[in-house]
Length: 95
Image (cartoon, rainbow, N blue to C red):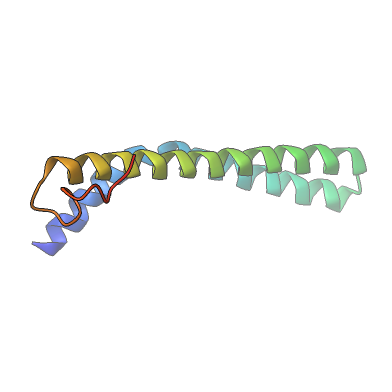
C-alpha cells in the first residue's frame, strides 16, 4: 500500500514541479556559460551571465514559494471540510 502511495504521489507532484525543473535547467545552463566566460576572461560576459543566473534563481525561488502557498491553501480547505480532523472546528487553521 505504501509503495502505491509513493508512486501516486510521484505522478501527482511531477507535473506541478515541471516549471521548477525547467528553471533549474536554465540556471544550470547559465552557470555553465558563466564558467566558460570566466575561462575566456571575458568580464562583460561574466557579468551578463551572472545576472541571468540570478534571475533564473529568483524564478526558481518564486515557483517554489508559489507551490508551497497553493499547497497550504489546499490543506486549509481540506481541514475545514473534514470536522474529524484536529483543529477543524476550533478555527486553528487560518487562511
